[in-house]
Image (cartoon, rainbow, N blue to C red; front, top):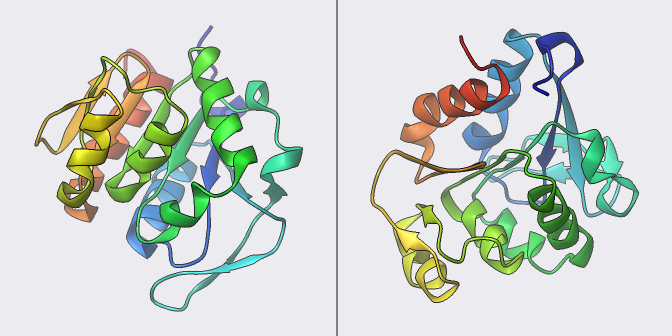
Length: 176
């Protein structure tokens, strides 16, 4: 069953040195559509972006329950390198995927999909510098602004955010 906009809760992963655009653009776009965005960090604390902006995590990954979120978003920047060191974020990603719910990763965020071992045989994209990592994890890399394979949505860079968010909304609100 697809959630209605008013009941849709999207989890957005956060860590220090995240890309500001890849965090705030989806937050505002989803809120515009009437959805709730829950910020999930390794811990429940403040996180600082590449540009020095502070964003608090609403919940720690260890306390988050995959089945409560209708989708997960994994932004890029340098944050995913640290997210990959958080077993709870990896486990939450894998469990969310097991439930067949959308997971959207942009730029270096696709690294976390590789760490969660969920891209084998899937079409994916991400920052060009992590192409080899995605291929070595079994992904079929495509250089495109957005790639959708089942419930996995991936994009390359901030310039791809309009297409990225469009596909997130399409999966969460079919028929729009």
